Figure (cartoon, rainbow, N blue to C red):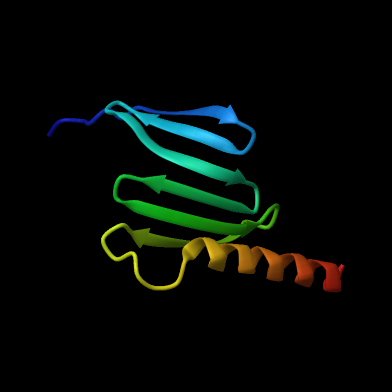
Length: 91
């Protein structure tokens, strides 16, 4: 049984924009930061929305093959807005 070696490196190319590298080259591009991140690669895209400092987050994946349906970016923005409103109400 052999062991597989992995390589992963993330390079910040602008504020809120990261280029993610693997041993085969560019693996994905991430946009965003704490609270909302949009990641796109050759197979699809992932939107992750979280409440910083709580450990709570929600992630949704959209394959490029099934591009119909709700836009995960818009869902992510709506969830962040809802989280900000709830934090403002309860703090």
